[in-house]
Amino acid sequence: MRIAVLDDDRSQTDLVCQVLKTAGHTCYPFDSGKEILNQLRRESFDLLIIDWQVPDLSGAEVLRWAREKLPANLPILFMTSRAGEDDIVAGLAAGADDYMIKPLRRGELLARVQALLRRAYPHQTSVEQIQYSQFLFEPRTGKLTVAGQSVEVTQKEFDLALLFFRNLGRPLSRAYILEAVWSRDVDIPSRTMDTHVSRVRSKLQLRPENGFRLAPVYSYGYRLEQITE
Picture 1: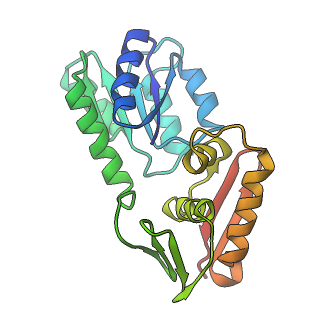
Picture 2 (picture 1 turned 90 degrees about the vertical axis):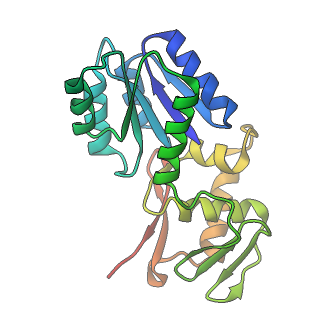
Picture 3 (picture 1 turned 135 degrees about the vertical axis):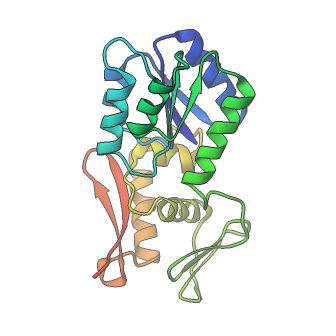
């Protein structure tokens, strides 16, 4: 999972990122509110961890912006050095899903992060079958069927299609897709992703007349939408 961390204390972001990386997540540290907002406009993240006190924009301002502009199910954890009930209530009222009081404890941090991710993305598990409408995915075998008919896809096409369905309605940045499907192979040509998206759209017939639309998001990435009448 891609997790963005905002804290102007470098020792804190180093600690958080170290804990997250040991659990297999990818961590992106930021030390100013303006910096993280600029990145949130361009990139997709699975979870935000925000310090309540940062110099340029407060954690509350970042949190309010995120709740207005980003997907409603995006989990947000805020950190605070204040243990007062008023501060905690204010953070939760502003839209945070959970909080932690500094100094952070590694075990508690990881447990809270994992709980938020499980709640926000219940389908991100190693199950035998995952079904969305007429699309049936079998992650362990890479088999994909549509309305009971097997569809021949490569592993990358399978991974890409499943990524879109798992994030139905959510815009995904090109960097997010690249990292999720091609892992660390960041040197692939830009057209490679576009070609794979085109093949997925064609093989799965993701067109409005079939109830789904896989469309580009200008200067950002792609989004799979379900069309409802």
